[in-house]
Image (cartoon, rainbow, N blue to C red; front, side, top):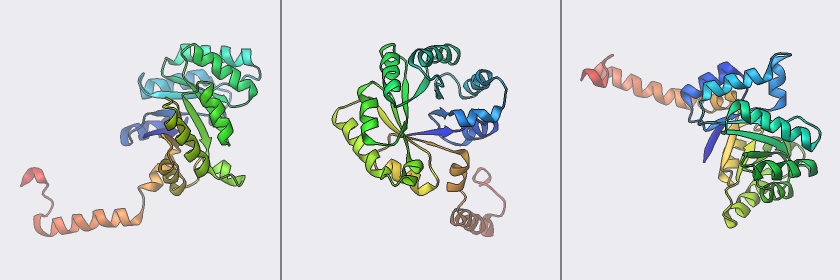
Length: 225
């Protein structure tokens, strides 16, 4: 079970690296538009420097045709290293690109997955990850939990190295449901992680323990006893 950070914000990534057990970072084209007209590839290289060579960095190609997407993938991997996962939309065109890139040993994330069929086709084409868009599916009245459960079941039955990578969460309940239904990995916005640890009951419990301790030992720590 893996956790990735869904962000291209450098300060948010730095904070998350210090506090959370991250396998990597996922980005998408919308996030990268926040850079404006800046150098997107330089920004991605900065993310790579921050997370190190061993963590995964997911980057989506933007070409409209197969040849352009494949060239983009080669260029991105050459700049960002072998632990870069190239995100490719699971369309007819995208499936051909996924097959080509995986045949070359490049890790691919089949993205914009909204159905079990898309996930199956991405898996059979060799994708390393199947990026299921949880909240967007719910907005379309698609049973996201069922899709994740079906896909994870197929992957387990076929002993595939592909993982379901659940994404697009609105709240903690969606996140935990994705894991509970078999997602091997989830990518989460920084603010959602912070929210999950900001419950008043957590703060109250920590404060209660501190008050009980201080009533007997004052400000002394275990190092001073």
